[in-house]
Length: 89
Image (cartoon, rainbow, N blue to C red):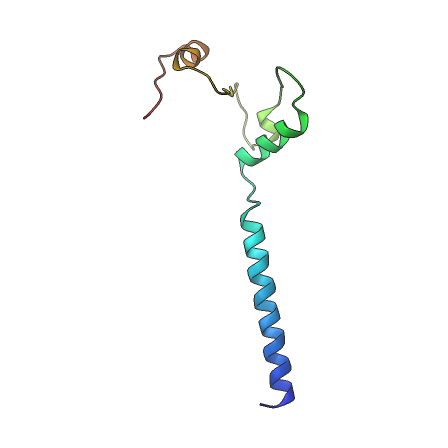
């Protein structure tokens, strides 16, 4: 192989390695509604409660939203939603 071919193969190999590394690191940082809300809570939660606007995280309006923390019982959820709630097994 001549020198130009070796340089070209080296450049292609470097680009492939960089691409694979980028894909692997990007996969772990997927932007989802869940991840965005969790990040917001982790940055802003300082006590018993936290008020946030779900419309800041989505492109549609919300009437309301509830987040239940463990150990929330089925009965607690039923009372909060005013419907009979049973957790799926």
